[in-house]
Image (cartoon, rainbow, N blue to C red):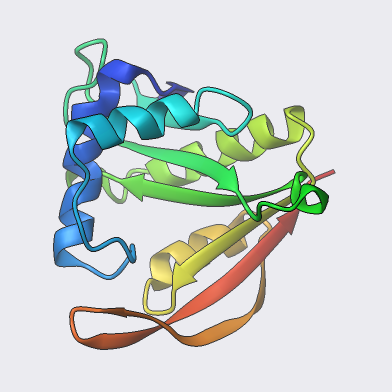
Length: 172
């Protein structure tokens, strides 16, 4: 298994991973699934200083990506805040295809993403995780993220108020 940068041709595979989480879970606060144009715009936005990576390679299962290879998941960073003083801080996201979970793909994606962030000169990576997603919180803690606190009832989805655990990792 390894990672590579996301490509426009990966759009449908990313939608196949992300949209079920939008529709069926609270791990993302999006409520509308992405269409192809929106997903392509998202990919374009992550081909500059804020990278997105996909997991591929032997043993990876998941929807077919740009090179007719299964994508096991993806991870990305986005702008943390718009003000100039925050430019060295990013917010991370990671999604693993349901059929690929439990194979180390989330760890691989986040490890490589953190290396890419360090190489790009970012200093702090923030993860905001819905509080009942214990697997994601544990993954981040195992990669050196520290819990900063919990934002209480900041989201609402599927008729429920949702808390968010905020974690941070400082890069060397």
